[in-house]
Length: 175
Image 1 (tube, helix red, strand yellow):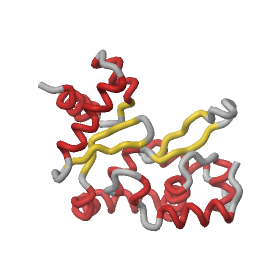
Image 2 (cartoon, one colour; image 1 turned 45 degrees about the vertical axis):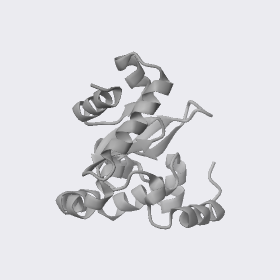
Image 3 (cartoon, helix red, strand yellow; image 1 turned 60 degrees about the horizontal axis):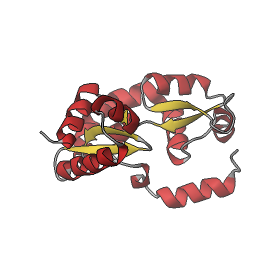
Image 4 (cartoon, one colour; image 1 turned 180 degrees about the vertical axis):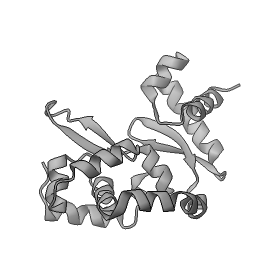
């Protein structure tokens, strides 16, 4: 059995994103060797119903974008019913501004987003991380689980990602 097979098994078993650091600990392999095996796994999954999803230093097995219309049928009703307009709006802001503070989300939406962010965190669609520039504050990023729900493998696959991101950066100066 290859290293990429072991990584696949661990990702399947965990059902959530794993960092390369965590894989290093579990498998006792160096980062370079793991990255080669991760690339091998990504190539092996190409053209199948599953894909390797990457977000920063984390990876996860998710559904193929080509299957997204079928997967969305299964997931859409619950997602729409529970998130509502505020949740979808907040998700869009986070997706197109990965690494955004609550204050900037509130400013963009014009309302307090605390309850909505909490709901998105509980559902595993976003993650709250400590701001490395100011450890007293946090910022919000999209999760790999969100990529799976949306049927994408990276945020650059979002509609008009580059153009929309530039417009947002020009319209509002984020800290």
